[in-house]
Length: 153
Image (cartoon, rainbow, N blue to C red; front, side, top):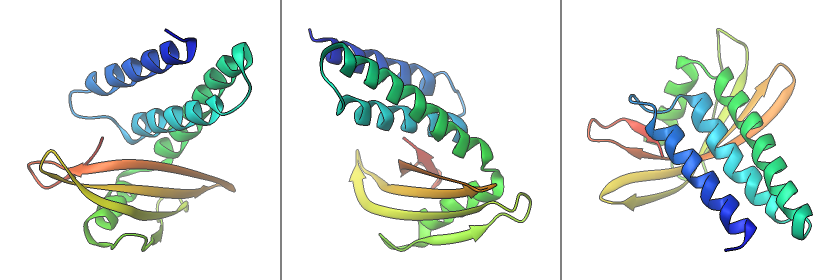
């Protein structure tokens, strides 16, 4: 088994344990960290070869987790409600923007693809946050649960 494959399996298992360890579901910070880590690992895997590639995957995963987690950490209940509303009402590729009255941070949520998975309505989305002069982007997938709420996958 290749080193890249081993790292991928460890990363996937780590993400699975992180998500299943949260009885009430992952927080925005956790979801952002998982998504950012996964994307960072993929980007890191495109760089270098051999041991350099392995180091790039690890560095990309850690950097992505930190960035994604910081976006999730800065979002409060107002922002989560706005993202949920965008998933509920906005057509694909139509952004919904807002400024949080409590923090002054601005966000833009854009549903990018609507699909069915295991009988559930699901949507891929992108959230761009501008927090205190720092601009960060996360992507994710949310599916509607039995109660009609959008839940990050």
